[in-house]
Structures are given as structure tokens and as C-alpha cells.
Image (cartoon, rainbow, N blue to C red; front, top):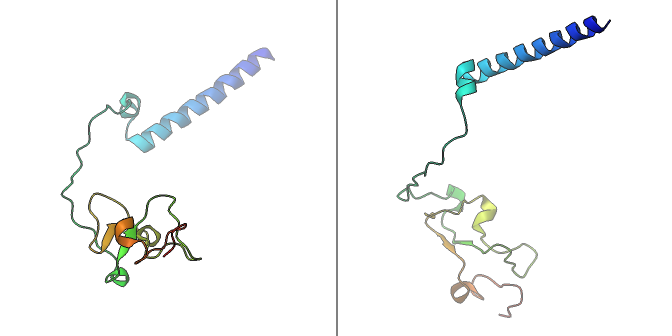
Length: 119
């Protein structure tokens, strides 16, 4: 009975090993490549800061959009007006035409009424 248990255990282990090798071959192209790959070395990645200027969708063009600081709140029930992030805008090194960062000296009580500011 004990030999039978050992043989069954070995057979199950062999099936698992074959499944693992098949998985490695399917997803990496070869077993050697799968076993040889290690962690990626720390290589600095160059960032192109001269990327093309992103564009707003056609329906959003002609409107002035603002990028508000995280946690910023405006008076009203609809949030802050013309929030660039609410239309799915990505904040990056280059902004589309018509998009700028919120500036209290420029926008308070003109386009925006922040919570706690009386206009």
C-alpha cells in the first residue's frame, strides 16, 4: 500500500511538472528562455520632453479648462467648473491649448469660487 501511495504521488508530481514546462514554452517561446530570464536591470529610461502637444476632443475645444490641485473644492453642487481631469485629461509636461493650471490670483471670483472664499 505504501509503494502505491509513493507511485501515485510521483505521477501527480510528473503531471504538474509537464504542465509547468508546457506553460513556460507557450508563454515564452522556449524553456531555456523562460528559465534564463531574470529580473530586469535598472536602466534609466529616457523621456522625450519634446513630445507633440496633446489635443482636446473637438467638443471640448473653444472652452477654457483648468487643472485644480488635488482635494480642491468649489462652491456649488456640480464641483469646480471646467475641470480638465473630469473629461479624462492627462496632466503631463505638455498641455493642450486652452488648458492651464489653476491660479488663485487669476481665477478666484472670475471663473472659480473656492470653498471658503466670498466673491
